[in-house]
Length: 330
Image 1 (cartoon, rainbow, N blue to C red):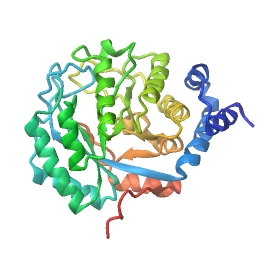
Image 2 (tube, one colour):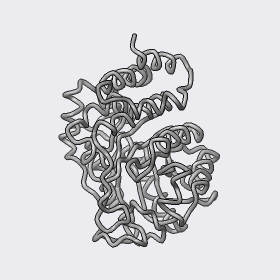
Image 3 (cartoon, rainbow, N blue to C red):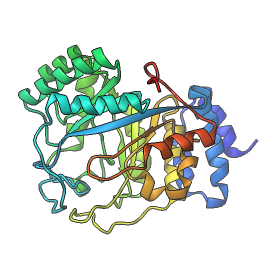
C-alpha cells in the first residue's frame, strides 16, 4: 500500500492528518499526483460514493460594495466594468430558482454584494425563499455578508438551509487581501449562523499570492469552524482589481489543493467553485475524485462552463447527481 493510501485509510478510521503530511501533499512531485488523487478518492468514496452535489448562484445584488477585497470586481477599489444593480425583486430570484430546478440543481445560492444586508434586503430574500420552498423545495443557501442576530433568525424561519461566508484566505495572509474587515469578523459570522441552526458554508480562494503554508492553514481553519460545505475557489484574476495579472496556479497544483482539503476535512462537502474552468482547464474531471460538489452555470461576475458540459462530464466519469429534491421532470 502506498504512503498516500495509508494516510487515506488512517483518515477514514478517524485520525487527523498532520500539518506536515498536509504540506507534503502540496509539495510532492507531480509524478505522484495520480496516487494522491486516488487516495483522496478513497476518502471521498467512503463518505459520498460517486455522488456529486450541484449548486447554482443567482447574483441578486451586484457591485457598489464598500469593502476593499483585492480579488473582487464588485469592491469599492475595483475598476472592472461589471453590471451594477440593486437587489433583484422576488420574481427575478424565482426565475433563477426555476432554472436551478430544471437543471436538477440541489442547492440554490442567493448571493448579494455588500458588507452586510439591510433589513429590507433580508425581507426580500425571506419572501423569495418562502416561495422557492413551496414551489420547488430546493435547498437554499444565502450569502449576504455580515449578519445581525435578528437577521439570522428571520432567514432561519423563512427556510434558509445554509449560509455562506467564506474565510477566503489564511489569518496570516488576510490583511494582504483586505483591511475593511478582519479574519475574526469572518469567523464570527460563521459562528453566528451556527448558533441559529443554519448550516455553515465557508471556503477559500487559492492563488492570491499566499504561501503553501497559508493554504494548509486555510484547510485547518475550515476544520476548526466545522464548515459543512467548503467551496474551493481558484483565483480568476479580473482586470481592474488589485490582483489583476496574478497567475500563480496550474491545474496540477489545483488538484493537490482539492486533495488536501479532502484529507483535512474528510466528511465535508468539498465544492470546486469559481475559477475551475480557467485554472483546472482540461483536468476539471479529475477534481471530482477529491471533491463531491460543483457549481453549474455562471458565477458572480464571470461566466461558467455550459451546464450541459457539466452534466456530460459527470456522465463520462460514471458519477451520479446527488438529488436534494426530486429531479425535474423532462
